[in-house]
Every structure is written in C-alpha cells, then in structure tokens.
Length: 222
Ligand code: CA
Image 1 (cartoon, protein in one colour):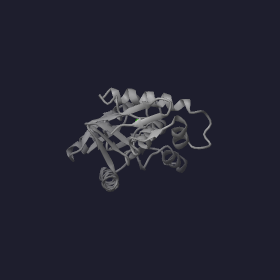
Image 2: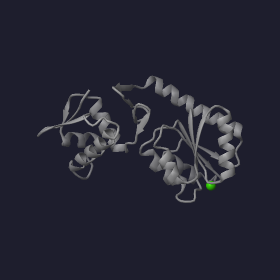
Image 3: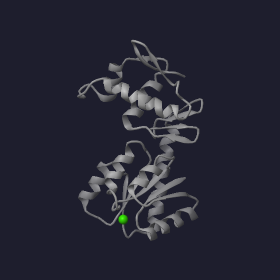
Image 4: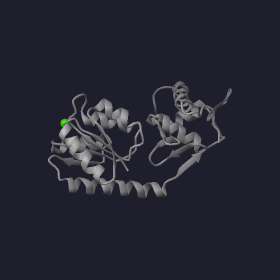
C-alpha cells in the first residue's frame, strides 16, 4: 500500500514515515502543498495531510487533490474546532486526527480506511482496454502502472464515453450529461476538455482512444 505523508515538520514526517515503512507501507513524503500535488499524481492509496502547511493550507490542497484523486484523505491537525472539521469534510477529507495523536490509533484508522476502500474496489468495476485500465470507483485511469491525471470533468467525460463505447455523443449531449441541464455556459467547453483528455492519453501512447465523428460528435474506441 502506498501512503503519501504531507507534513512540513521534518521530525514528525520522518517519525511517521519510519513507522509506516516498518509496517510494510511504501511511503512518500511531501514537505509542502506544491510537492503534495505533484506526488498525488502517482498511484497513492491513502494520504495523511497536515492542515498547517507553509505554502497553502491543507484544506485547499485537499480540494485540489480531490479533483483527480479518489483515495482516502486523513487530516492531521492541531486544530480541534468543530468548524474546521466540517470544513475538512466539505473539502473532500475522510477523517481527522488531532495532534498529538497516538501512532497506534493512526495506524488503526489508516488500516480501516484502506480495508473499506478495498471492499469498495472489489465490488466496483474496473475496465481494462489494452494497457489502459479505468477504475470507476476510484475515478482514476491508468496506463499500465502510470496514473493519468484527469480533472473531475475530464474523468466524467471518459466515464460517459467509455461506458458507452462505440456510441457517438454530440457535444451538446456530453455537455448535458456531464455539466447538467442547468449549467451555465455552452458546449464549446466540451471540445476543450476532449482536447485535454486526448493530450493526456496521447502522452501514454493512447491517442486514438477518442475518435471524432465529423458533424456528429465523439466516440470511444474499444
Ligand atoms: Ca504543519
């Protein structure tokens, strides 16, 4: 299991890193938010996220990570205000551990989240298409071992098209399905998103996955 620790206090980060790697976890450590966003692009199973970071606060980082990562996120914080907790959950966090915490409790919580995740995954569907795999529960797309970082709407489009492979969707239909009926804006944004998805897929040698059917729309190729 791969654990990402986001913590600016070097001694705490090191202590946690040592503790979890002794227990068989593969540990990555980020000392600030920018590095966390970078490391979260890789395959990560769970994230421990300090709220007080030097560059940006953990809540904002959480929200940004949530755009492309579905794994559990546990906040580590000295703050105990209820308002902060609610804010953390609203930003996509799954749990809260207040400092000072007991390592045994933290380990138990991490284990519980991972088991829950595992249960969800075994019942969820993962679709394999050549070297691409799409994990619909975790909302992630992999090319072999490499995670392709997709923003939320980009994944929504991939989900819609890939679950209806070979079916042609017009821009308008994609817009309605992904952005919703009452979204403000227009379907032009769909083309921009498709361009971005294609660029990311192409970087992994999967450029032909989404076809343009001239005058009609887009189609996911098996
Ligand atoms: Ca801190």
